[in-house]
Length: 148
Image (cartoon, rainbow, N blue to C red; front, side, top):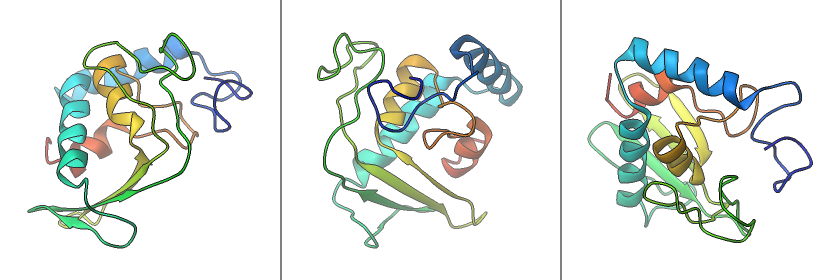
């Protein structure tokens, strides 16, 4: 997860502790009254609905515009047994470098991230390390997904 690991972009920064990040996010989720599994599944569902979208060709939901931004290569779950294997935790997570962009029309909030994040959140309660490209703040995600 740290710089120099499986990915060119780290999921944690130097000096960050996975345990501390997970604990902090668990407290925030508790304050929100939402489970990571529910947020991750809601993100999965939105991304599945928007599977035919593309860069600058958004899929419109009642409250949300969604773009799947296809990328070459793959990003594997760091909990997978091997770098090139699918993670078998929870509902599983397939390797993909695809990104997404979510625009919440009511609030104007825009979130971008990696498709693998849906699995990381749902099955590992991991929202990415603060300051990394993988970070999705639980509260922002709850707003965008209309779960708050």
